[in-house]
Image 1 (cartoon, rainbow, N blue to C red):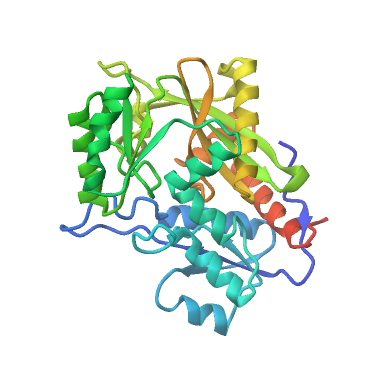
Image 2: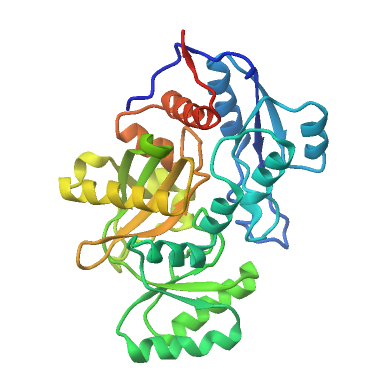
Length: 353
């Protein structure tokens, strides 16, 4: 935890930092109830603004709406702290704001449009990581109903259990208590649910029965490092004995989820988690900050199941701030570390006060 502290001053030209975001709102009766799940609450945006202001900056809140382009061109901030997930259901939506900022020459925190677009796409992420030698679960891709024939083929050729997910969603959207498929009929049902509910392809991963561990990565180049990790499990194990970190779990995390810091993990597991997280971060050419989700297979190998280059930053319920706190850090230093990494990448140095 070597990013310190608020006794820093920023020389010109950085005075105003814009926070670009998507504000969570109620869904309509004809919309899926998780449509805006990735968006941020007003309390998260306010907490982030307070921390940035504590470093001596002014902040301006910039929602991704029809007026954003005009605001950015008329009175652009000196720098942007980007937490926007992007609009609609496009697989490249997380690249929308970084692409706009780059076209306007406004520097920003986080990964570039290409890395963000690839990381949201679970199929492409799996392909890239596998090519780069990062352990991932075996995956089968279902683009359309014509691919449903693969379901029977999987259970003929292998004796495995599969978990079905949407191809380009985050925040556990599309992961339900019955997403695990133990036969072809269950797999077909779960794939069709993704097609109908999320209007996108589905992926089926070999289900990994071991511990779920998530790690936070901060920095760039030789300063890239793991800043913490935690194990995620159920407070009360289910009757099936199988744990899935579903959206329902995340919504009711205080009652249902147990977060445990790195001290509960064996030293070899901590080392493996840190090494795997760093390899994944570098393979996808991520920047500044990310959260890497992993799960252990039967042999004890941690495999990457999801990449989060725009991790949630609620100080109360988001996984990255929680794991950082359990690893000895605090929210103030986390936001400082993200800003410091982004500033340095642009050649802007935070001067000791």
